[in-house]
Length: 417
Image (cartoon, rainbow, N blue to C red; front, side):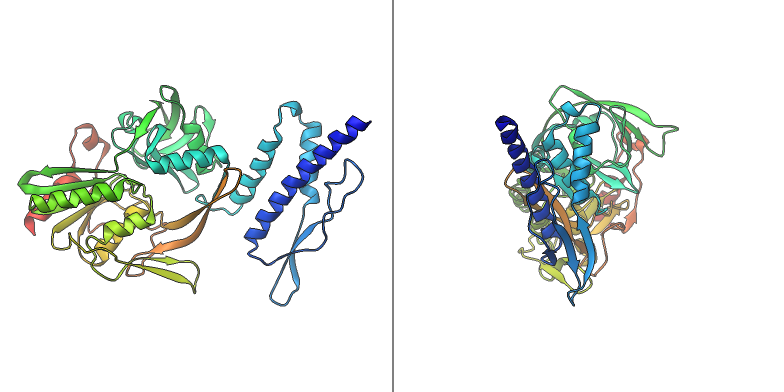
């Protein structure tokens, strides 16, 4: 009996700790407006975690407008452990983190998500520019898991994955209702292993399976090339940790070679750090707003140009496509609004929202959308994207034949200015 009592106490302690963690997260979302009506009350062993806590939200006058009773949470918890066929295989940590993911997904924003410790670690690796996987950025468009951009020279690109491809299945499992971070977790994996994506694109009669062998993805985010007529091509694949140093080197190279013009290739660039995008845009924009963060109808923050505009006098073309998202849209939108560049390509993805990453002590994190982006002229990017000055298509046939009509038009544009 004494041992059973000790076991029950451990169970009680564990469940109360989980409860308090969930409750504290709820308080954070309530922004200080939630109110604890009753303190936790210990009850009979086996029922003590069925607490008397009721979380209630108050309006400005102090009247209660909502109530959340956590009794139901623990009832579901116990029913699963008591009645599920393979209950002995259930990990309480999985139930706990799964419940947090469910709460966050209820917001309905595909870019707001809870990252368990493993997903949080993977996210940090990806932003550092080195990870194992297929090398493609994914997002949710029209409730369908979609390729934003395959990064160049990666397994995804080599396998023929294109921006805009819709992913219906991962290894035979439907992606309906999947979160972005869950999809990332399933697609990524150890070097040498394979993942099978069932994808659909407009040129397909029906979805097709594409097998991709994962590899170590080491991305140098900036590449340069001198084209014909001394035109300088700067390709930025993503706005990551190494971007600013490499971009500064590119600027110095352009100045030393006294190039005729610059093509900034942001195609299939899924984005990255906001500060990095502002720094890049500031090499053309001498003063004024680069991007506006709108938190609600009243509150917003304007980010001003902070560079010395070393590239402002160069004839510039920016290349974009449906894989250009987030930070790429900030840069292309700013240069377009200030008439500092001609934007060529196809409509960008339209991922104009701001996420902050809030880490927790156990290694997990909350990635939450806090604002939406507007271009300097006040145009929303979210779900709209940037419309090119010259719309030039780049078909799958062009890709297969190694023809790049968008780049060709960029060269013509600089030569004709």
